[in-house]
Image (tube, rainbow, N blue to C red; front, side, top):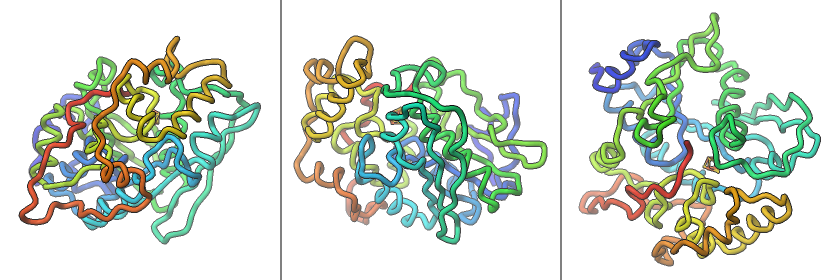
Length: 334
Ligand code: SF4
């Protein structure tokens, strides 16, 4: 098996990975976006056996009606996994984004996770009584951006620590942050012990796309002829959430045009909490300063559907086209 450049970058970090073939399971945190897609394609290029690989998707809205996220995302993730013959497991915090945001002297909700046999496990839901009634802050995780840890990172960790199928190591957990996305991300090590690592079970964390530039990501996707998430064809530069708190002015203008009822609901919550998502600028102010993307009607319907029927792998004769969202920053997590 070849160990190409990203393993060079992993080797320069303080923590060394095992050869990929030695991991019992390689779990890719798969949002449906381009960077986690790149992690999957890279693993396949590296010769990872399909029986080692699993895709995990954390549903930020739980099993409630879609709120922040794209309605099509779960169906897109299922279609992607099926196209590559890979297992896909969902995890979510009960009540999702809305329940967590409306905590009022309550504990966080438990986490549910799909097991390999199709049953649903549940764990977590402990901890202090907390009042939020507040949007996540447009800041780093340590400065009030609670959505990423509460709805993604912690959710995956609860599943990893409570599903007996993962009781034995070594395990490799892969996420798709890239060094050129932001200054804080440029400091992420290529590899480190995962937060679920213990002396009894080795769990490594590999930032599997860390050394890729955005152009490398799109080239990898083009080479594998993958049809990306519908959001990119509408003009979004990042996936996952449709209404990501990090959206720039043009993205908020696009949210308002695409899903006006959702936009009004978000604006209403800003008024109710007495605090805006972005400091000093409401989402209405932001949308007023932006210009909506050109969003063809048939593409809007695809992104807002809960079904996904297009082939993930382009059929022979269909030209792979760079989507309008490519190389658009649209804001994004730090
Ligand atoms: S995509 Fe944006 S809003 Fe959604 S969980 Fe991540 S940072 Fe929060």
